[in-house]
Image 1 (cartoon, rainbow, N blue to C red):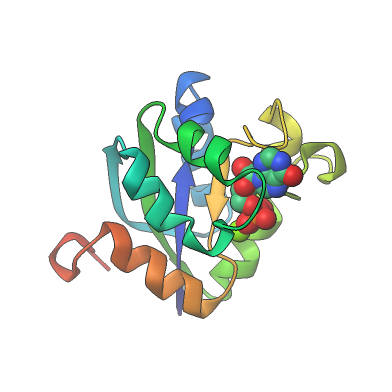
Image 2: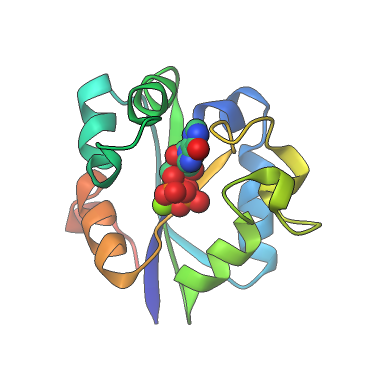
Length: 138
Ligand code: IDP
Ligand code: MG
């Protein structure tokens, strides 16, 4: 069993996609073992995306991620890091495969509805960034 962090980004929450994203996870055999709605401060968003701090889009991305409520979830399943990335689709929604969350709902390369950890190391960091052991039901 593997775990990963998922975030429904502010644009996803604003578009009313919480249920849709959760349904796609559940339909694909992914268990949600922790979930909460939060609003990040700019500094919390900067800490979360610290790996991107040298990228030109860092300031805009962290403004966006702190612009409204998000839903953070811990997902569990076999190979869930890759499974979630497949359901999400490519970062750029114009390149994302048909039927993926980003292809169906993203409006912009930045406003792409969902986040998903990209490796076991980032999953461990990202889960610990938002949840303590008592908040994870798995
Ligand atoms: P990922 O979310 O698919 O893992 P990353 O490369 O880790 O993509 O980038 C993190 C987030 O930064 C993306 O989901 C997107 O919101 C934003 N982003 C990535 N590349 C660009 C860009 O070229 N312009 C604006 N925003 C970007
Ligand atoms: Mg990433």
